[in-house]
Image (cartoon, rainbow, N blue to C red; front, side, top):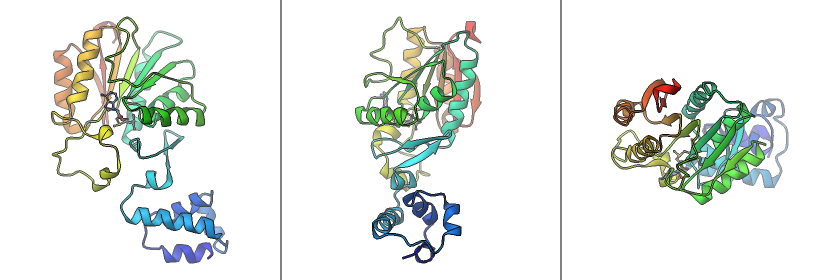
Length: 268
Ligand SMILES: C[S@@+](CC[C@H](N)C(=O)[O-])C[C@H]1O[C@@H](n2cnc3c(N)ncnc32)[C@H](O)[C@@H]1O
């Protein structure tokens, strides 16, 4: 079958061109000028299987096993959340916080790194920074390590751990960034496609705020880390800002889903 016939056959499937182009290792624009290219049976079988998964509702990131995030190609499997575009603004906030740090080698920690997308993006943008990353899931960490190597990003991975509970209380970070699970199971606008993603990466108790509050508690208690960058749904922001204030963390800025806090006035 050639490209033109295959595309015609799948004309009702959104993003079918991206599927075929990825299987053939070209850009979708390549297909336009190579309509007569004969797809070999192995590639056609791969593209057909991907289309079947897409039709069944599997998100594109898992169908193709990769996505782009902050200009980096991030490999994906079902152990990790598919990085979202809104998380790129969280990276921007972490970069902004890092600029305030008076050190040539700022120390940044990404908690709940998942695919590694945040840590990798920061390490690529800030070659002099010491970027650390961890996650509670060993499987996610394995993929994050693969992605860091694949993208030639210098990220120091720490053993799997529950937030900062195992961290040395004397070793502080200039910027802690965390996109933790914050989805409230009760939200009635939840996308069905979320069924494909790991529960541990999505849901949290206490209206989705349990882990975020726990991390704020830990940072407030440690008194050694400088900036905290969090991601949460905008409908949760006011509650988080209020909670953080009670724990003496000052809200500095909101950027889309991202929130930036400073732990003490000294660093503003
Ligand atoms: C929303 S995903 C974010 C993944 C990635 N950072 C991103 O932005 O796409 C949340 C991540 O937090 C991890 N996680 C869940 N509970 C955790 C905990 N108690 N301590 C550390 N990481 C946790 C999950 O395994 C998951 O990888």
